[in-house]
Image 1 (cartoon, rainbow, N blue to C red):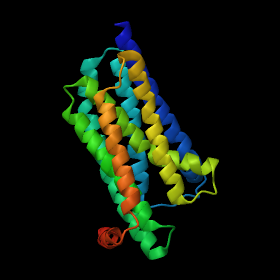
Image 2: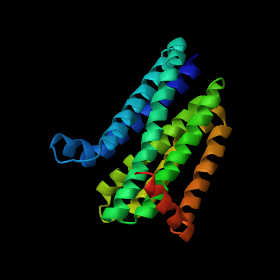
Image 3: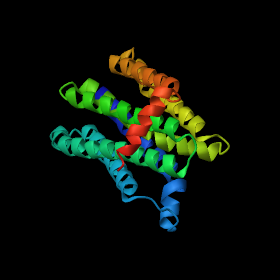
Amino acid sequence: MTSVRTRSRFYLLMVSMIALLAIIGFTRRYFFPLAGGDFHAPALLHLHGIVTFFWLALLILQSILVFTGRMSWHRSMGMAGISVATILLYTALQVAILLLSRELSEGGPSPREFNATLLSLVLMASILFAYAIAMVKRPDVHKRLMLLTAIVILTPALARIIQIIAPSLGRLERNDYAGLASDLLILIPIVHDIRVRGRPHDAYIVSLLGIIAIQLATITFRDSYAWYCATEWIAKLAG
């Protein structure tokens, strides 16, 4: 029982750290300007932010329920988590399309390349979350995939933290570094698995390799002629 509680405590600490990093990342560029009335954005962007932080709060609650042994409550809250995550991913997709359309018409630094990065994050988070739901009867796989989903979703906040630390970096550079930072965060649960289980869980290894593959493919493809043509069609989806 002690070992189980120790593992549950680790996941609670991890999701709490992720939520804290998300708050730090968006405080300067979103919360402070919003409080001062200086942040103006479409309602969709605000909705996405609210849903994202609500999902992180729900993830912390779910981790607390597991840690305290309230598994029936944890399962009951599962459908709420699926609904919120679905809205989160849908709004993330819509935000990416909206930003692409606006920046192509109004101007912006590397809008097509940046959009490829945003869409790759939506793709990675969607795959991880869908697989986590499919593996709900395999708690050892499910909880690890949920943690990885949260780490991928954290990437934009990491990009903003990097912007605070190194303001001279361009948008693409800091987002690439944010992707690397999220990969490094995945090493924390991998190391924890090695200490507790003697080896990392296959879910971590397979997922990390898949994430890196998508990241490398995105960097390679995002400045190609084919992607430039695709973004013309994607931008039209904004209406």
